Amino acid sequence: MSIKFIKSAVFPEDWPEASHPEVVFAGRSNAGKSSLINSLYGAQIAKVSGKPGKTRLLNFFSVNEKYNLVDTPGYGYAAVSGDEVRAWQQMLETYFSLRGTIVGMVLVADIRRKWSDDEAALCEFMASLGRPVIAAFTKSDKLKSNELKKAMQLKKQIVGPEKVMAISSTKKRGTIELEEYIFKNWVQKS
Image (cartoon, rainbow, N blue to C red; front, side, top):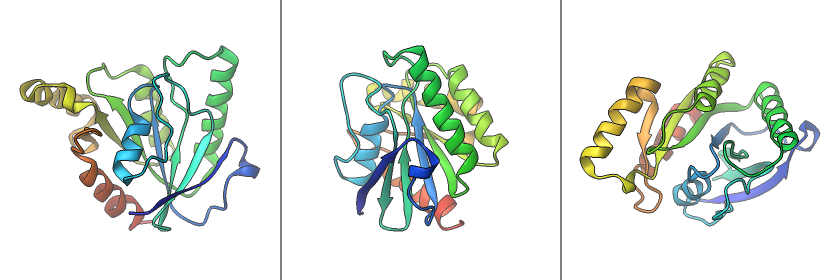
């Protein structure tokens, strides 16, 4: 699999040409979004940090020259000002509303955490735009087998059984299935 960085941008006039379907990766700061992207595509292309909130712009990547992956800023407990959070929200709302090439969103969430109002609101917003979402529950390797089963049952009740996957970036659990899902259900059908 080939992934390459295209560019980072904030404003619509700076986004790359909309010539390929786009898959958006979004999630809380510290949910493991960058680690998932790196594991999924076998490259250290997304910045991983011990400090949440490193992603500040929309980062566009080309995957096999078939579709673009868009890495968005994390939300939640990144230590940033209220003004910066509002600027990020405006950037994301503008991107989601104007970009007609978005074919779906992977919402990255830590399986050990409760489903938040932010995550529910983001799913509702995407649904209002007619865009599908799949929840990739990361850090599944941190739970014992029976804990993982219970956690996934709960997540399926909240999000929907066909819209959740358990992922471990370190153990490569679920990454192949997620890439296949993205390609078959979103990219090929666009």
